[in-house]
Amino acid sequence: MNRRYSDNSPRTGALFGSFEAALGVQAAAWEADVHRLARALPDGLRLGTSSWHFPGWAGLVWDRPYNAKRLSREGLAAYARHPLLGTVGLDRGFYRALSAGEYAHLGEQVPDSFRFMVKAPAQVTDGLIRTTGGRARAANPDFLDADLAWRAFVEPASAGLGDRLGVLVFQISPLPRRWLNDMDALIDRLRGLLARAADGLGANARAVLAVEVRDPEWLGRPFVAALKQAGATYCLGLHPKMPPIDAQLPILRALWPGPFVCRWNLNPRHGAFGYESARADYAPFDQLIDPDPHTRTVLARVMAGTVGAGQPVYVTINNKAEGCAPRSVGELARAVCQAAGQPEAAYACTWGRCTGPADSRRVRGMPVAGNTRASAWRARANSLCCAGDNEFDGMNA
Picture 1 (cartoon, rainbow, N blue to C red):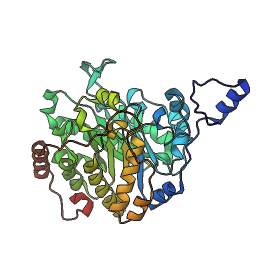
Picture 2: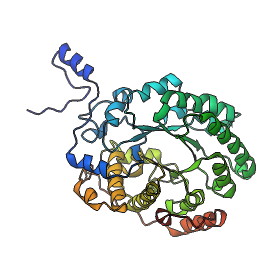
Picture 3: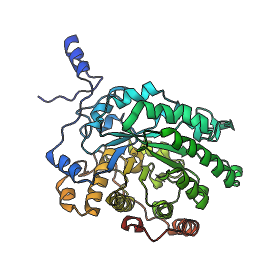
Picture 4: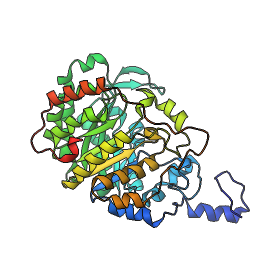
């Protein structure tokens, strides 16, 4: 008789419990078509999720349900065994700076080919000191401090992860309006931070420096120039606080050639402050509730074009983008294979596809996006960031 176990299931004796604990979190079993899809993806392209501690991924990533605390502690090795998951977002350092030893412990759990996308501490990237509820209570004197960024983030992440460090992401939180009125001063501080970070990486020169922002006022020529000067790139942040994907592409064109880094964070249906709304709608994160085929198609074309030109690609997806990050990864992998001219691999693999809602929730289609805001930001970005003649096909999406 089949039986579904959870970490709270009754045990049949201490011996069974000890044996199960010794096994640790186990990966799900995948059909051969999943491996074929992974092999069909272009070299240099890594897909992943923004974290790994979700019990709802049982059957997709884990062999059975485990509680979130156990997955957070023990699930990374099982996650990294998935054929399609070659990277993961490491956001825990945003709330508390991690030591080199803590990074090393994480790095020891994954294969040599795996790469981490590591998020810088809020102590460096948030202009405000906030309460636990997120309310601003004071200006942050350490905002974009170059030396602190090196000591608290770049140096320990580089030393601890070594070659498994893929991307260092400086995600700059939303700033007060009065600060955004002096973009020159902000760009100067960012330029100093990136220069210190680039110089300090040293032997780990393959690691990518990327900057993600939450205010569209950053998106202009001075920002692009600062990134270019440091050899950094723009992390495409797909979040309702920012313009739609089409309107952000001119920034990437202006930085070409270079790596492509993207964090697909939150479905626009929920608005700029919609994380809790998305959590309520999408938990336990086992189904695609709000598929976003337009974003997926544009991403796939940019990814295929970038990696086809010999540049690395890193994309992580949050559960709150469509409802279930592993299923989003599967759909995006199929879209990339089609964009790269390998449709047979995409059609053959059904892993992660939803055949229908698992409960009474309705799988919704994306609303038709309003063109006014997207068109306005596309025009602004194009006027500020003049792309050269060396654009590749993916950037013309």
